[in-house]
Picture 1 (cartoon, each protein chain N blue to C red):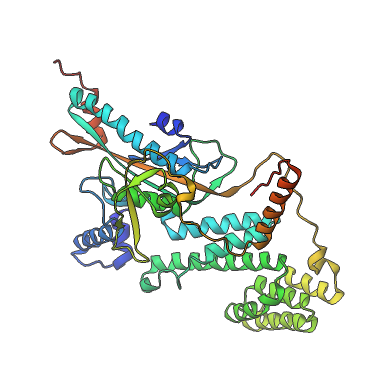
Picture 2 (picture 1 turned 120 degrees about the vertical axis):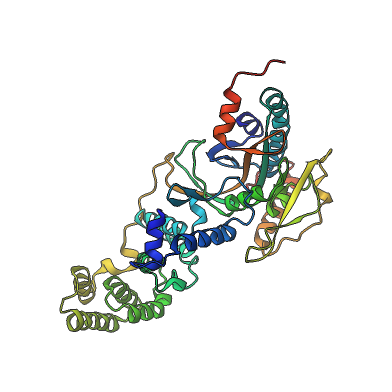
Length: 189
Length: 270
């Protein structure tokens, strides 16, 4: 499983009892961390299936795994190496709630993971996440599988930029410059 | 926590004869509240041990621990001379409070002791946050809040000192000195003691109009050496949590010990 997580660019951070936590985005953030995490989760299930065939044949037991994935801000220690870092944040708690709610063999994604990964991953209809808990109702998105072809970005409904006039003006200016001079301009956003 | 200790905490010296049974009922109710989705026989956060119970949870799941950690992080930032960072952590920590701690357990001594500890930590956090905001030049906004805090906690000299500094920086030297006289009167009349050296020194500095009291007089925090990273940082990350259970072919769950016994036994011949 460590290998699967590493293949998709994550790190396995810790084992707590019979739960393992993997992190995508620390120390280096990637645009598609959510998608990578979900792909890793699906592959973990596939690998386990293969392992289970062997376990069942040899020992008469099987392992059932439930996976929860959520994205959000976490507090990560800067000075610790990967593989034992304690991360804090709502995303960690939410991933735990999703994991506990998931059926064996399935992956549940949280709202933010769903939002950023939906162009690449197919999800089933959302389900309510422990409705007994106080606060606004949370939904979980069951992962069905990867989408065959990534939908191009422009297929998304365009959301207008609000309150970014200065930044937009600057970008527009640089674009004009680039067109006018025929040389490139670099902008870090 | 041993069952005896819990019974002591709940009923004191003379527990009813049914104390053990009642405690078990309470624990099972608590379990339902804490882990409505726990699978029968599965891993539980609230574990029954020989003669007691253990709550094994992620440290972020306990708001009191989370608060303590946020306060600690905030105070470390304050120590490094990063008031904006400190103020943000401390504000987040204080934001976790929803009224007095353990208010519903007012009659339980153990809870009261813990509530007192948390309340002290809350005041330390408030004082830290005020220090951070004073460092950010928000003295004008702080005066009203500090006056209210001093009224509730008249013997906390640090709050008095902060109020004096905020008033001084607002150009209200006379009011600042008046706060000091109030503090002295309260301490002498109620407790028979003089204000501590910090407050006395602050009073002298105000009288001398010591430039060290001005916001800009503080030396800027030394920059962190390049390439060395400190403390914690906020990151956008995706967290994957996978939980694993072992089951037999008939769907029965196995605990890890039995799983090991089974998997380490000689392999069946086919």
